[in-house]
Length: 212
Image (tube, rainbow, N blue to C red; front, side, top):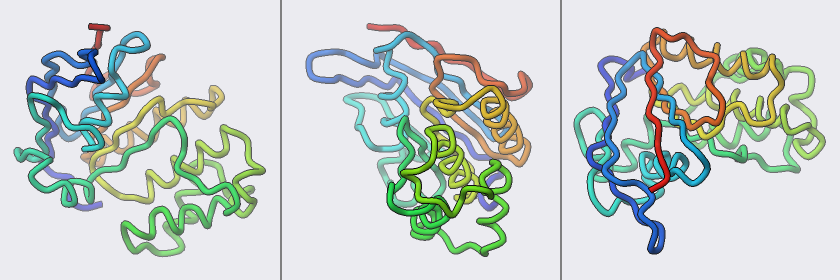
């Protein structure tokens, strides 16, 4: 994994409106290498909106998001090469197999060896059903395919929206372990959650959003 050293993600006085509703009001945060920022708050507090703003899918009315000291909007394509966003629904094609999905999803981002793909699938416990069409997989298995893709991206910044959705207790622990390993390698993460992540307190930071 490249580009992991001294990476910092920062939000400065971020304001975002959705129609006439002021969703984010002056939000600020800093996340550095080895840290995971856990976003909490009730439904409607703006957790997903903040993640979408960070990755450039929504533009704030005021404030800015900075990566490595530079406003991400100055060069979104460059920023996107260093981040991976995993939303509520895994970005999978139902008629393709799990392995085929990873091949096309990750293949447009980077070249990788077959052994890397196999290793990512094995890490999430997906080797047994990786060659089945995704439409035949359970919601938890689909989530594991998406987690394999996250590993295969090999980027420093993970943006995760409810990453444990549809996972059993073992799968939830797996997510915590994967995040811990990512942080230990110098990566950083930002995750919107309803329930606490099973990650080490050492690198965990918290930001609670309220409905405004």
